[in-house]
Length: 126
Image (tube, rainbow, N blue to C red; front, side, top):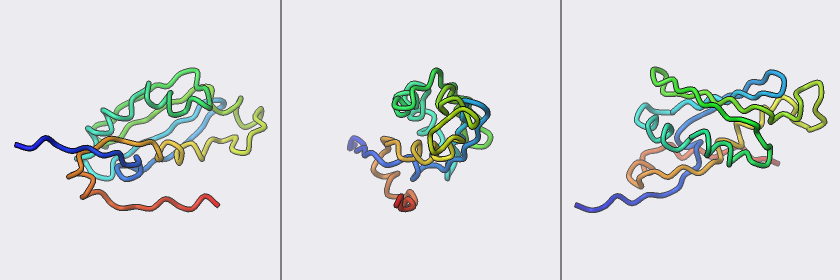
């Protein structure tokens, strides 16, 4: 029996995301493209990993809520919107771009699974 080989792929190959906000809190949903990707997401998209991935935004807390019936999760990032829509001077006061940042996070998957994932290209940023 051969040991599985793993590679890193961007999260957007496994899932899609939506973002919402309220004050200085951002909600990011992560929804698996396929049910067989959900357990990989549960293992890879942890509170600590998301906090580290968003370290430049300095979240005060990251809370993850799993929704297995939908093969999804909701991430609540507190303190990432520079005070929120009415207080922030940043260009993305609603934090809509945060889901795109999250979807770039590398996720380690078996090479055999990676070969079956959609080869989705992200939208150009410029």
